[in-house]
Each structure stands twice: as structure tokens, then as C-alpha cells.
Length: 39
Image (tube, rainbow, N blue to C red; front, side, top):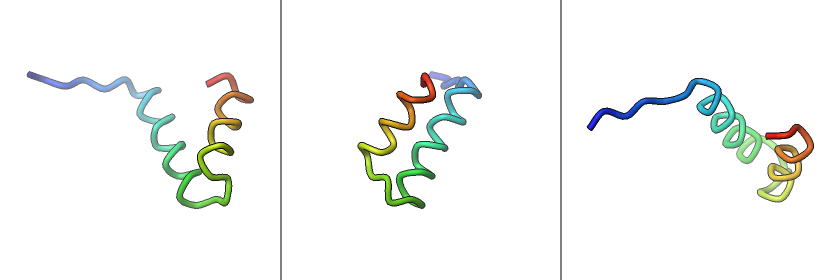
């Protein structure tokens, strides 16, 4: 089985982890950010 990644999805996932780890937003803040930016 070969896994393929969509580059745009990878960037979003990296951004989610970065915001969660490096800000005080928490999971709700990350969810709000995603919703506010249409992601």
C-alpha cells in the first residue's frame, strides 16, 4: 500500500499542530481559527 499526501492538507495539519503547541489557543482556539479562515 502506497500512501499519498495532498500538499495543501499537509500544510493545514502542520499549521494546526504549530498553533496548538506554540500558542495558548488550545484546541478550541485552533478550531475557531480554522472556522474563521474557512478551513
